[in-house]
Amino acid sequence: MPGQAADSQPGDLANEVEGYLLWQARVAEAETRARAFAEQLDWLTTGQREQIEQHYVTDSLQRARDDLERVVARCHSLRAEYEHRYRTLRRRCVAWVLAVCAGLTTVTGLYLLL
Image (tube, rainbow, N blue to C red; front, side):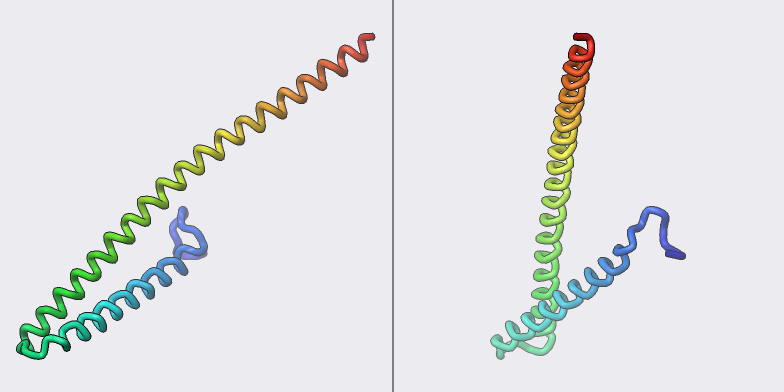
């Protein structure tokens, strides 16, 4: 597509938009939960309530970010593991095909010599 980097995939923009929307939903959820939490503390002043809400939102979003980073790290780990297994399996398959072809060639050569 015009304007995209050479190494970007067609679905990258859609993934970025989806990620942005999901994060904004997480922010809205954290803000809603912070307000609900602070409403229970009816003795707080307006300034204290705002501080608690902000701290709650910040803490919730940091925890969400940490969770996402752990998931991303695990995804990278699994991808590397599966790529390694795929390469090993592919080498085994090629070795078996070559061995079978060599065996058939040998048997055919011997048959033709007799």
